[in-house]
Length: 165
Image: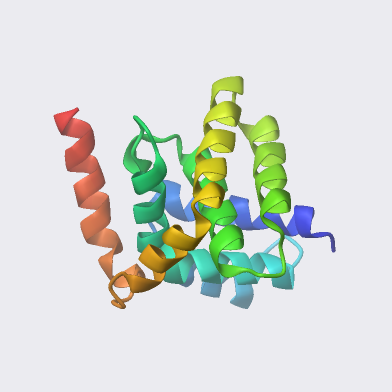
């Protein structure tokens, strides 16, 4: 199965977990045990979902650091999950060239987002790529605590941030 299709399937799962405020890894486990009417998730989709799920907190911190004006909690659910996939590919998957990760994120945003989101996503990912070495150093130097265990606290912080804006 093509990686583009795997990215779409990963995006669907990440979106569902985000909308339901469900733990990404527990939803992935459910999908792997009982795919239901859908075809089983492709291996690359599983890699993306697991990678994002295990490092969501650090990925979101990276997005917040490079985003101007919009923190992750204020972004549209679809847009932040497109960005999470792309940041995982850029920073943590050496098999995918940075340009391909950006192009694929833009392709997803053309399908699921509006024109403003496309420009925002492109600019944000380009900023991360242009500062990749420093970004990686910061990313790898951040707390080793499990990102999934801090999801509840992050969700509350995002909600409080939205209320204060």
